Length: 192
View 1 (cartoon, rainbow, N blue to C red):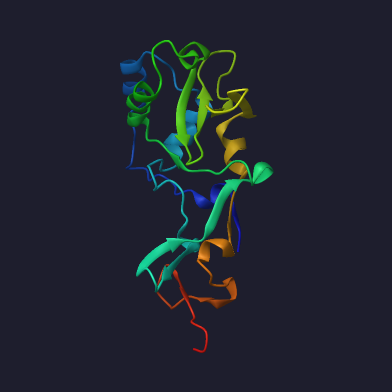
View 2: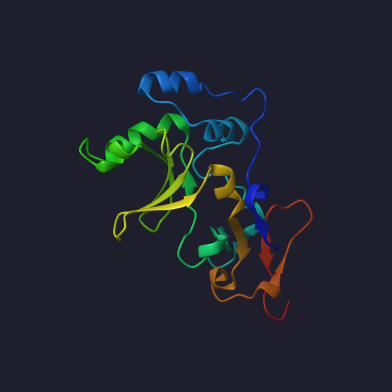
């Protein structure tokens, strides 16, 4: 019960168009070609870009639906967790809040596209020398920027989400069951 790469992404419908030209004009930059195809093809919304419904369960103790899947980058599973992607219209306001005008990020031609809860950001190159390349920014480590993939499609192919018993708060994967029509798992209590 593992999902990889594009299996986790929701396709954007033909009616759901985004105005990339307007974004480029307003921000005086060009979205790199492969990243442009990616955001035109897939729904990129905070917490909604990645389909994790196969890894959700109802926790009776908390009366809440919780995740039990570990979403990570395959080659660095313990070090790189994937968090969320940002919508195109959010990118520049988020960057302006995080990075000062003097920050090297602007000179390097990197555009923030997502982050995670580990103080790491995912960026795409927009200059001629780094166009479409994906970088990981780690503000607390040296080097700060690490080349990760040649483009967003190569990057996404490395994503995995797999169940982790650790996230079940003491329950076992073998206790999970799913009722017909529900899009989450339930925990069979001991003795049931």
